Amino acid sequence: MFAYGLSVRYGRSIAVSLQRFQELSHSGRAMSSAAKVLPQYQQFLDEAKLIRQKAYINGKWNDACDGATFEVRNPATGDRITSVADCSAKDVHQAINAAQKAFKTWRDTTAKERSVILRRWADLMTKHQKELAMILTAENGKPLAEAEAEVASGASFFEWYSEEARHITGDIINAPFKDRQFFVIKEPVGVAAMITPWNFPSSMLARKVSAALAAGCTCVMKPASETPLSALALVQLGEEAGVPPGVLNIVTGTNAAEIGKILCESPLIAKISFTGSTNVGKLLIQQSASTVKRMSMELGGHAPFIVFNSADIKAAAEAALFSKFRASGQTCVCANRILVQDKIYDAFADQLAELIDKKLRVGNGFESGTTQGPLISKKAIDKVAKHVEDALQRGGKLLSGGQKHPAGEQFFAPTLIRDVPTDALICNEETFGPVAPLVRFAEEDEAVAIANSVRVGLAGYFYSQDVAQIWRVAKRLEVGMVGANTAMISSVEAPFGGVKESGMGREGSRYGLDDYLNIKYICLGGL
Ligand code: ADP
Image 1 (cartoon, rainbow, N blue to C red):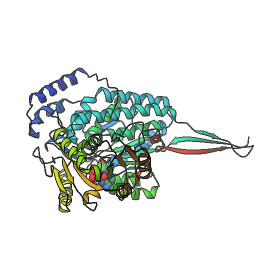
Image 2 (image 1 turned 60 degrees about the vertical axis):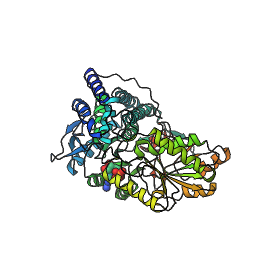
Image 3 (image 1 turned 180 degrees about the vertical axis):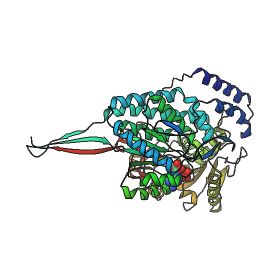
Image 4 (image 1 turned 135 degrees about the horizontal axis):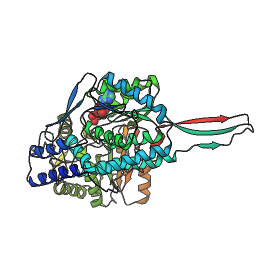
């Protein structure tokens, strides 16, 4: 899914500590308890050069103005990894001012200059892929292989936008007057504020900051407090890549509401780019109304995954497994409702149950072979348990899982429930966990109506071998992204984004630059 050419060359000291780490974690083999992994990765984290604890403002690593810090914990074990600056209003204003000042020179750099820096940043991410992945697994819990893929995906955004930076062009429009000529040029919008989530703490930031810098914008970033370390490590590499002081600023903190409000209401910020929940997205739109900002919103989804009678059942079941259980179901594009047509319903249910049993392994993300890490918080576990209980109360039948997993407090067993009615909570609210509900349908129209019945529309998937049906359904699904006979839709070349309450704007692809550019029309007269 994340194809990216990787040539990993480590500095000697990191190579030694990584090798040691790997030996240790493999010697621990039967690590059924998540806690047993701690000493091994703690040693790695102690030696990791990319672990940063401070905010980065105007080219300097600073403590929070009031010296406050907060703890970052590993969701697999609950153990403290480190403590990080807990920024408040004063820090945020300093970051905004630095970004505003730097914009005056950064916007006038040539596209080639920006491109060279972005390319170096991509290469540095690739060079440090393993270390970045370990930091990511430590703070987010996802399996190391998934973390490595995420870092590769993040690097690919820097690579892509290093190229796109040089393709920002304008237009010459023929005027209907002999004495005038019309031109269209594109200019960076200004200072962009970025608020990012914990589920892809590395690649979401990379996707935003690479496009912003390519366009000539400067940034103030606020990562999720659960996972600030991946973002800080990226900024460290950005500094090494040669991003000038003030162009990149990052404030970490637990008071997201306060930081978010300042960013939204500041007249010095021209744009908010947010990835997170629909509720917070709506709040940020409201708060930004008084200063009429450009908004990019990547909000929640509730992806339908439809399997029609003509589908290749095996391929569909494998894709459903990938889509539903990657990152333990904590992705905004993951299948939230699996709709299966009558004739193949039982066969599909059996295949998916078998795959869950055979292919998924719950455990610490550092253990080799783990496919299912922990959920991010106890609150997330409670929500998943509530969705399962509700679906079963309404007549759903449990085929796999259904309860917490013994690997630790924040682990939930991969769960499959069949015969779930469409009024169940899970069919209407985003679950963000490893639960696959199967819903039966008879006709195509019925499936499309169920798919479109929610207020969000990010991704939608379906399996069918009927060409006319493929085109019809792809057009009728009210989503921003369709996977027809595939669930692997993410790629730097393709536009990512949703419709309805899943948000506005697109990230990645050539369209992703538009969100950071203003169009200016120049009418040259007196000719
Ligand atoms: P989730 O529920 O998945 O954590 P959120 O939307 O709450 O999703 O979080 C996404 C990002 O938004 C995180 O960086 C979080 O700190 C931030 N955030 C949460 N609440 C607010 C808020 N009121 N204003 C601004 N940012 C917020």
